[in-house]
Length: 55
Image (tube, rainbow, N blue to C red; front, side, top):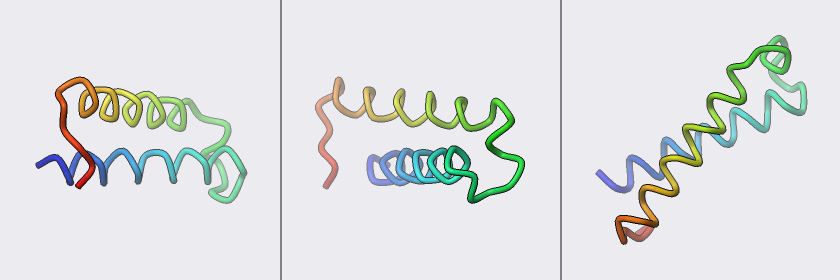
C-alpha cells in the first residue's frame, strides 16, 4: 500500500511538472496541475507523518 502511495505521488509530481513546462498542451492553463501537486504533497506528508518509508 505504501509503495502505491509513493507511486501516485511521483506520477502526480511528474504530470504537474510536464504541465507546468508546457509539454502537455492545455494542462498548463488549467487548475488540474495544482490539484495534482496538492495531492502529491498530501500523500508525501501522510507517509512521513505516519512513519512509513519509501521502501
